[in-house]
Amino acid sequence: MVTFGESHLAVHAWPQHAYAAADLFMSDPAFGMDEAVEALTTGLGAGTAMRSADLYRGVPWQDHASAAPSTNGAPLPQRFAWSWEEKYAEAQAWGLSASVDIYDCEPSAIRDAENIREFVRQLCDRLGMKRFGECQVVNFGAEERVAGFSMTQLIETSLVSGHFANASNSAYLDIFSCKFYEPRVMAEFATTYFRGSRYRMQVSLRR
Image (cartoon, rainbow, N blue to C red; front, side):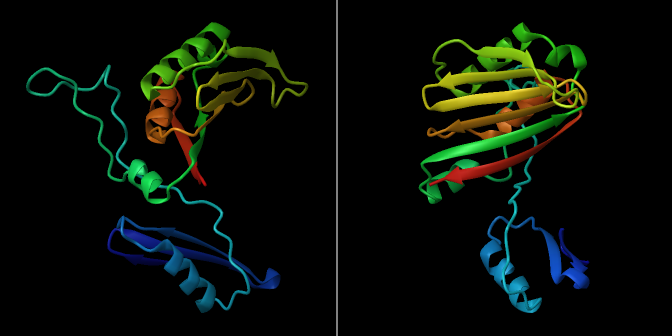
């Protein structure tokens, strides 16, 4: 492990399998990840390298409904240390897909079909998404590990979907849209709504 500034690099190696995994955290938004991967590949003498995930860490979103008011009484604006919208524009992406896994949800919040429908209504309003048709919420699952409600909601720009696992009290949400939306708004609002303890998010820009 190497630490530098407010960042670090950790490499985990399994020589018997000719395999290594590297975790790189950087606080500089101008950092060149492609160059770093190339340097690691060369330095480790690897034949191939695969980037499994790019996770962008930022300032948590403030819910406008509960945010502390500013001096003039208005809610504070939402602010992020890193802009997904800029990245979306730079990539000339066709769409954006975000997957959010929320852990330790309030059991009653994910076992109530109408509560899930209300979540979808509020989420779409926050993200400026036009719902198309009714939100489908169905309770099923052949195995106890996966049993729970599943949800789908068509939107004008694609789809909102989710599964709520009773056994682990976890929520697994996905939004794909060909119109930009801020994924951290989705993640923070959903975690608050279902009263989860934490979340994990992965974002893909579709080209």
